[in-house]
Picture 1 (cartoon, rainbow, N blue to C red):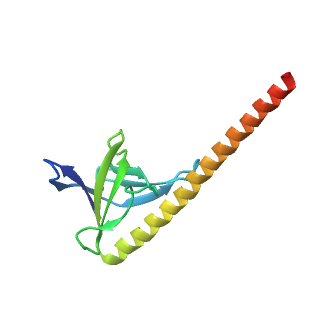
Picture 2: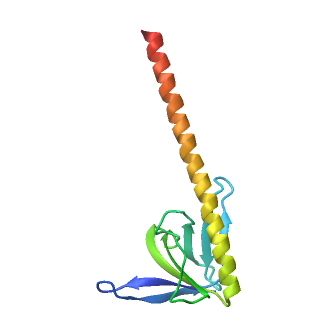
Picture 3: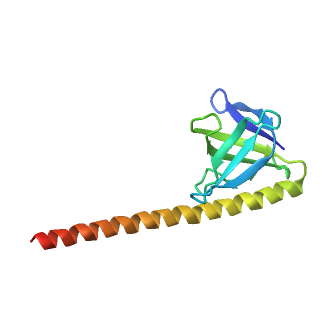
Length: 143
């Protein structure tokens, strides 16, 4: 499969530039459980795409490229260049079946990350509430 990124030029115009070929992987981090998309250049193993798969439009919202059944387009906060940059990607597959399998796995990863992120927010809220209650209890003891 090959991945391209959109290079903007003047006021809305631009073009797709090939970033490389390789295998796009959806990797689950051991510590956090969050899923990220990672693609390395086939021969050099240089990272050419590296971002979390998020349920936060317009990011990671797969759309068919020009009606093709073999190509998906999406935006992401990518870290492949070592710093965060918003990129628009087009990933082309060898056949429609592979593209459909990728869409299914990508969307499942988005849902999994959404559950983890909402769980993290819940834990943070619970911790903050617990801390507030402890502070209130201490104030009552002082009075």
